[in-house]
Amino acid sequence: MLTQPLVEVRNLTVDYVGANTVSRAVNGIDFDIRPGEAFGLAGESGCGKSTVAFALARLTRLPGLVSGGAVRFMGEDVLSFSAERLRRYRWSEVSFVFQSAMNALNPVIKVSEQIEDAILAHRPRASRAETLARAAELFELVGISPRRLDDYPHQFSGGMRQRICIAMALALEPKLIIMDEPTTALDVVVQRDIIEQICELKARFGFSVLFITHDLGLMIEFCDRIGVMYAGELVEVAPASAILTAPQHPYTRALGRSFPPLSGPRVRLEGIAGSPPSLSALPEGCRFSPRCGEAIPICVRLAPELRPTPATGGEAACHLLQ
Ligand SMILES: Nc1ncnc2c1ncn2[C@@H]1O[C@H](COP(=O)(O)OP(=O)(O)OP(=O)(O)O)[C@@H](O)[C@H]1O
Ligand SMILES: [Mg+2]
Image (cartoon, rainbow, N blue to C red):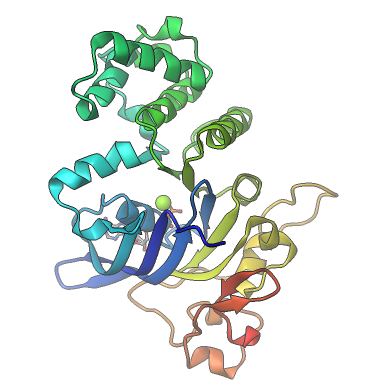
């Protein structure tokens, strides 16, 4: 594939700076998001997924600090954007839907006004009729009747409020939507409905998605490729289908075994023994080696690098593969 990636992340490093400590939450990771692709980030709690998402949107705030590497968006260096360029980047080019986004709606302002304000902030010359028409169109896109545009947030269910946030994220036709646990607070049926709707919208408008969820089954269904993170590093990147059928890294295998299968008979879930290391006491060598049932002597001495894995067409960082 010769098309330029939409997003190129190179050797990205993010620290959290304390009074006397620095925790490296993301340690030099590399991946691309292609145009129109849904890219998933998987991994246990605390492995750095949200930290990566924030860095991509240039939303890292102290004590967080992007201390190295590059993020390029359509070839442009995002980390050196001016304030003016950043305003355009956020919402018009990249938008964000968080787990708690639905609670970010202002309770005392009609949702129509909130959507119109979001549009006006970036398209100041739009007329009232234009913003209202766009708000109605967005409501229809996410399956809510435009007759409800004049309602207040509390008059909608949690699922509807989350759909409204997705509508707002779509308002300026961004090229990338970052979704960090966008449906986790919702029940399973509503969650699936919303994800299916995002899939349809993605097919129709061709935007890319960075998708983060703890539901590996949902991620595999929705994403084209998945990056698996462990303790601030990417250990494997592979087509979504290969994450369960041909996992190359022992951690990816362990993660797959700890999730219920999408189909077939019920099996006992194994979970992953032990817990991820603290960022202040990282093991030598491969960070997963203390929990890895397959570790060999070199694993505790030398950190493996991401290398191409011919079996999946992706990459993995494991000495057993080299
Ligand atoms: N504001 C902060 N100050 C200090 N450390 C932080 C801060 N935010 C995150 N961290 C640390 O950075 C690491 C990565 O956190 P992050 O929130 O990116 O993980 P995550 O993969 O998104 O986890 P989850 O699945 O629970 O959302 C963790 O060790 C976390 O404790
Ligand atoms: Mg997170």
